Length: 218
Image (cartoon, rainbow, N blue to C red; front, side):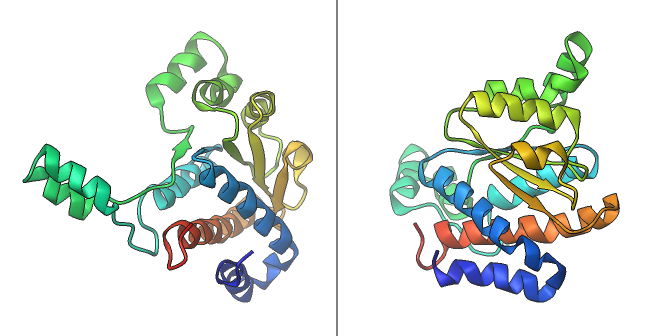
């Protein structure tokens, strides 16, 4: 991996030395995500409570600029202007390239309909089955590693040949056992785990952005 990408992990550990033991897993998780995005695949994310908020946060960092400007390329800008010389010009200046990320916690009508009509614990699994395609990545966030609806989604992911990244706490739970890569931050209390999840996924987002939109973009 390029040093310009590894530096983000090293900066993370300088700020949060407790995460040193997660270094290799963070890099492995990044490599899974990079491979998916290089093959025009997407990330699907799910969690409960604070982890649901994290799911949407991650999508927000990936679908638009985080640290680096991401202007559309000239070819697409020209197409926009060709469609509408006024609005297209404005869009050509304002649109930003994204890395496709879908938070499975964000579709209230679908989620509540499935919970009410079918199965409360299968809501993420249903969405993953609908949105997911072979080669995508599922990021399951669970402080315990035992969230039943997240684990159900991992079954669908594996059946669809979707790689699973687990973001969890020290004990890892079942999620760590079934994931292709598990980042187990070294805390046991829920709020302390959540406090470390944020800098970890910010680091992953910075690495991806640097790879695809930085000076040596893919």
